[in-house]
Length: 401
Length: 129
Image 1 (cartoon, rainbow over the protein chains, first blue to last red):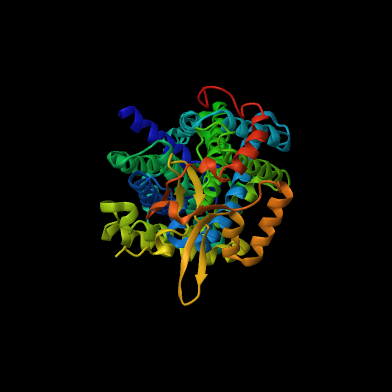
Image 2 (cartoon, helix red, strand yellow):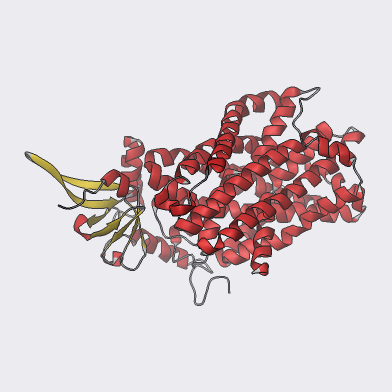
């Protein structure tokens, strides 16, 4: 039981850290010091609340979020989040494949485009030949290398009092548009809509039942909190190492210094491994989620534990998604793509969170496990935050992106 | 007196499972038979992507139908299950027939033949072994 719990927490950490979390927090730390720590915490609280609900939905009803939204609100509503999520997830997938390629570029010095096709092929192979356990646990365990950001933060001895004070939101003294753009990008990188349906689909794949609800809560709280600690580690390291040198994180080369300062020559290897594994793991999750979303939306047979010929439509969706994403990243700068897509993540969120609130109060799905008053109030606050982000994301993208 | 069945709430858009608990598709459409001077009779439920897309935006239906006919005209067409086979409805719809005897899995089978040609697409044992 403890092993299962540890596995769940490690997996949640793996799902939390990706190219978006690394890029947005490194940029935020370099430009605004510790000031945007609060944005990581806001995103984390939102994602804990929402993933717990998705896990509860799956454990009690054996339905995923996509299933329930289509069934409860009909195809006319479902078509909106389906379309938005397919577009945004494919762009984020492109950014993740780009992240793996950039990591290999940092290790070898060869142009990142050379590595895009091999990275995409490796990703596809893991999904095609592996099962859910290989994808989730295998990649997630390798992703623990990202804990080096936390050790690095400890090693650099930041002003802990200042870090703690940054947990309270504050107004910027300069570059307001860029500050708020980074704030919503950080929240968007943490509160990625794909995580919600992927988490619920994973719970169905692993056949969670009502007796597993305690595990769902523990994994959602501790897994996401540990993931958040890594994100704070990156932000603090960028604030301590990159900001004072007057450098800007306009490519991943500058972000490498976050680990070179505390670990010396090992820093580059640790950064390359962290970036590559985090992006690879998130890429696998995103590809699978695209296949889950479409298959569940149309009621097809789906499971990563089935051989591809047994659920051919499911397997072909993730195959095409990877192919398309690889083509996109060949022509777009991965860092710019990441920053754009993280803000868009926030913009898509309300279309997914709002129906979740409706489903979580439906006794037909949740029986006696429907949301309580406090959870409903908190979810309404998350929806409000998501709506504000959706409205300001595009203008801020133009002004401060 | 038989209990009324709210078709839109308890049938439309729900997941269909057959007698073997296999996923057949979603209820994308409900076929009604209009009757003079009497309420329409429910004939069948339909699982069909063009039908689903047509409910979102009518022109999408024709586009999806053309695409299906272009890819594999011999298998294009909706899966229709007589309403008398609907055993249970609620958050899912259970039908009392084996879906293998309908055309529900023709696209999975057709694509499965292509997928099986790719290494790892088919084979013995559990996936990931």
